[in-house]
Every structure is written in structure tokens, then in C-alpha cells.
Length: 191
Image 1 (cartoon, rainbow, N blue to C red):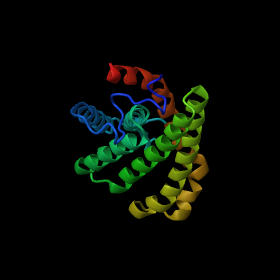
Image 2: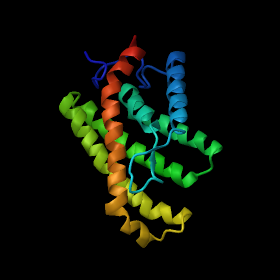
Image 3: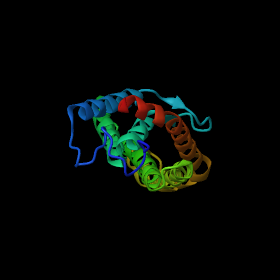
């Protein structure tokens, strides 16, 4: 039975039936620490808006969600950005980072757990991407005017030329990298 099968009771599951072992706590702490370090990497991926950058911390949360379940992915994401706020007080940007990551990883992993094959993997990632991009657009309309001089109408004007392509590109990068590394990571943790 595959370690990614929803019916598999593996050694690093986060189900309450298995409890929290010292090993699982250590692995979770590792995921959180790695995700936190990744928040400091800022990659401009969208030339029309170089001020918008991609950080790979969401990939770590995404992999944690595939290996341990969606709740663990959310936990890694939230802990990462709460701790990051202590180093760089930007609660609005950090709320957006949590929103983008959680709305991508939860639907993707839930679909995959219902259909643990390539079709489920791709379908889940497509659904997660659509939900994440939509959530980021709505989130920007609400949150951006709170901490910048941009008005709601300014943000709405950026939806098609900036917000949709940037967030789509971010989600696609996260999905591709996660799809490539999830099995090797699961194998390393399970061994």
C-alpha cells in the first residue's frame, strides 16, 4: 500500500489514533524551521510587478500536507508566518501569505487523498490553484488598501494585469516543485 494512500496508517501519520511521537514532533519542527528559512528567499518572478516576490516557504507546507495531511500543512504554514512576524512586522503581507498557501494546499491534498493517483494529484493541484488565485484576488481587494495608499478601485484595476498572473505563476511553481519532491521526502521520512 502506498504511503500516500488515505487508508494507510504509516509511522508518521498525524491522526489522533497514532498520537504525537517525539520523532513526529522533531520532523514537524524541521518542516517549520525549513519553511521559516525559506521566507527570507525572495524571488521576483513577474517582471511587470517586480515588487511582488515568490518565497518557497509554501512548498515546504505543501509537502508537509502531502506527507502528514492537510492539517499539518496548515500548521507548518501558520507557525512559519507567525514566527516570521516577530522578525519583520508585516501582518498584512503575512496574512496574505497564509491565505495563499492554505487555499492552495488544503483542496489539493483533500482531492488527492480521495483519489491517490496521478489524476487526483493533478486535479487537486488545479482545484487548489483556482481557489488560491481567487482567494488572493479577494484578499488583495480587502487587505491591500489597509496598509498601502492603493484604493479598492486601484486594486481592482490590477486584478487582470497583475494579481491573477502573479498568483497563478506562484501556485504553478509551488505545484510543480511539490509534485517532484513529495515522494522522495516521504520516502526519506518513512525510512
